[in-house]
Amino acid sequence: MNKRIETIKKILEDKKAENVEVIDLTGKDYIVDFVVIATTLNPKHGFALLNHLRTDLKPLGEEFLRVDEDDEWTICDLGDMFINLMSEKAREKYSLEEFLEEIKSSKE
Image (tube, rainbow, N blue to C red):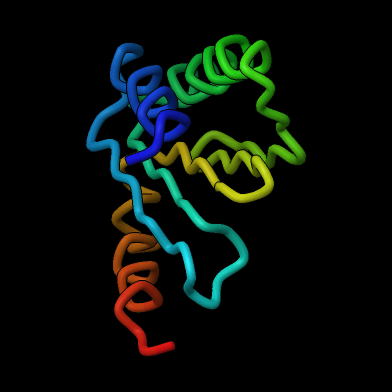
């Protein structure tokens, strides 16, 4: 796992995000190389996690190209990586890991 991913994962875990998962899609036919998924405890927690990521990653040169946020699911686009901060309900409903694992295991 590369240092960027480790840093992002550590920030999320240190700030009490649950079930942090990293899916490596490098070389696959998908719009980003990495997808990070983390479960938030509540909407306020999701907002706080986003702020911690921005505060901690911007000095490291990370650029948040786009952020779509709501109470259930926040997506941060870092260009070659998406960070998904999802409520437990949204995570179960959308089964993002399943979808991404299918892409990951598909033939080139």
